[in-house]
Image 1 (cartoon, rainbow, N blue to C red):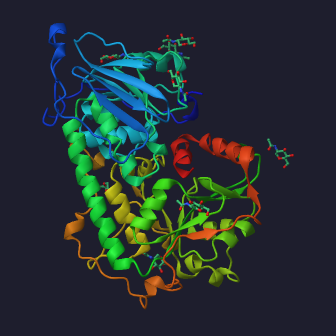
Image 2: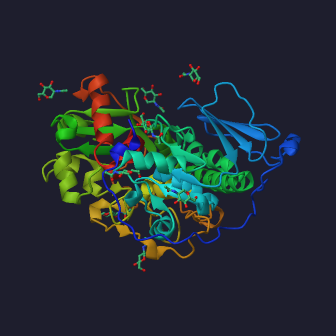
Length: 481
Ligand SMILES: *[C@@H]1O[C@H](CO)[C@@H](O)[C@H](O)[C@H]1NC(C)=O
Ligand SMILES: *[C@@H]1O[C@H](CO)[C@@H](O)[C@H](O)[C@H]1NC(C)=O
Ligand SMILES: *[C@@H]1O[C@H](CO)[C@@H](O)[C@H](O)[C@H]1NC(C)=O
Ligand SMILES: *[C@@H]1O[C@H](CO)[C@@H](O)[C@H](O)[C@H]1NC(C)=O
Ligand SMILES: *[C@@H]1O[C@H](CO)[C@@H](O)[C@H](O)[C@H]1NC(C)=O
Ligand SMILES: *[C@@H]1O[C@H](CO)[C@@H](O)[C@H](O)[C@H]1NC(C)=O
Ligand SMILES: *[C@@H]1O[C@H](CO)[C@@H](O)[C@H](O)[C@H]1NC(C)=O
Ligand SMILES: *[C@@H]1O[C@H](CO)[C@@H](O)[C@H](O)[C@H]1NC(C)=O
C-alpha cells in the first residue's frame, strides 16, 4: 500500500518562490562532485559509527557508502556524484551524493533533515498539514511543494524528480528507484531513535553535523539518567502508556483500550527514575476489550500518559476509561490528577510535534518524562515541552509559519543543559507523590491471563485499522504500537 493513500488532507498553498540559498557548508564533507578518475580517494574522512541503533548500518568505502535499513531490508548505495557507480550485491537503490533534492513522506524524516540544517534541499513533503515545525511550515508556504497526494500519477512524477525519496516501509512505491526507507519508529531504544540522525546525515555527507548533534544529545541524555536515578531512585512512581479507540468503522465498531510497552518507552520511564507498567503479554501492546479489564491493570498505576488519537477533555477521558466519582479513589493516577497527553505542540490541522522533534531529541524527551514523573525535579520551575496536564485541561499550543525565525537554520534541541540543572531529591511527603508506593523499585508487571484481551490477528487488524484512521493518525499508530 502507498502511504499516500493514507493521507486524506491535502493542503492548498500559495504559489512558490525560488528557494533562497541554503545554509553554510560547515560540517559537510565532499560537497562537490568528483571527476570519474578521482574516485579512488578517501572522500569520507569523517565517518558515522552506529552505537545505539539496532536497525541500520553504514559501511564506508573510498567513494561510496552502503547504508542498510535492517527492518525494511533495504540496501542503499550512496556514491559520490561524478564517480563511477559501484556495483553492490542486493542493492535496492543507487543514489548519487551529496543529494541535491530530497522528498520525505514521514514527518519524523523531515524533523531529522531540519535538525541537520539541510532543509534547503527538500523539494517535496508528504502529509504536509501534519507538519508542526514552524520553519518547515514556512518553507511549505514559500518553497517546498507538498506531494500532490490526491493524484498518484502526479506523485510518481514528483518522486522521480528528486535524488532520493525518504519513505516509511509500507509506503512502498513500485516504480521508485530512488526510495530509501527509514525505520526510526521501530527502534527499541530512545537513543537508538535519535541516532537515525546518522542515517539521514550520510545522504548529505553531513557526518560531522550528525555525529556532533548525536554526541550532544546522548551525553545530555546520560546526564539526565544519572541525575534522575541518583535523586529519585527510592521513590519511583508507576507510569502507564495508554490509549482508547472508540468504536468506529475502522475497528468493526469494537472499542478497545490499550497499554503500550514499546521499547523506547521503557528506557524513558526507567531513565526518568520511575517504574514502567508492563504486562505478561510479551507483545509491544496489550489491547483490552473492556474498560473493566483495562482498569484492573491500572489499579496500582500512579501516572497515565494517554496517547489516544482523538484529543479530548479530561472528563471525556474519565468517561472513556470508566472512572466515576465512586471508583476514582481506587486509582492513584485518577485520585491525584496525574494524566498527561504528549500533544501540547500541534499544527493547525492537529499534526503532533510528538512524531517530529522528540524522535530526534531524546534528551529533551527524557527531560519531559522526568518532569511528569517527578514534577518538582528541578529546583527552579519546569514545564514540560510536549506533555500537557490533561487533569487540568491545559491548552494545546498551535505552531504556524509565523513562529519561524530562520527557515534555513538547523532545528535546535529544546532540551535544557542537564549539567546546569539543580535537581531536587524526591520527597515522599510531598503531595506530588500522594498514593505512590515507596517500597517498590521494579517495573510493575500486570498478569493478563484472566483478562479480556484482543489477541493475535484481531489485534493486528485493529492496529492496522488505527493506522488508517486519518492523516494525522497515520504515523501516530505506528509509534503507539
Ligand atoms: C532481503 O533482500 C534480499 C535481496 O534484496 C533478499 O535476497 C533477502 O531474502 C531479503 N531478506 C529478507 C529477510 O526479506
Ligand atoms: C494527475 O497528474 C497528472 C500528472 O501531473 C496530470 O496529467 C493529470 O491531469 C492529473 N489528474 C487529475 C485528475 O488531476
Ligand atoms: C508507475 O507504475 C504504475 C503501474 O505500476 C504506472 O501506471 C505508472 O505510469 C508508473 N509511473 C511512472 C511515473 O513511471
Ligand atoms: C522538478 O524539479 C525542478 C528543479 O529541481 C523544478 O523546477 C520542477 O518544478 C520540478 N518538477 C515537478 C513536476 O515537480
Ligand atoms: C465484527 O463484529 C461482528 C459482531 O460484532 C462479528 O460477528 C464479526 O466477526 C466481526 N468481524 C471481524 C472482521 O472481526
Ligand atoms: C515485561 O514482562 C514480561 C513478562 O513478565 C517479561 O518477559 C519482559 O521481559 C518484560 N519486559 C521488559 C522490557 O522488562
Ligand atoms: C496536574 O493537574 C492536577 C489537577 O489540577 C494537579 O493536581 C497536578 O498537580 C498537576 N500536575 C502537574 C505535574 O502539573
Ligand atoms: C507561536 O507564535 C504565537 C504568536 O507570536 C505565540 O503566541 C505562540 O505562543 C507561539 N507558539 C509556540 C508553540 O511557540
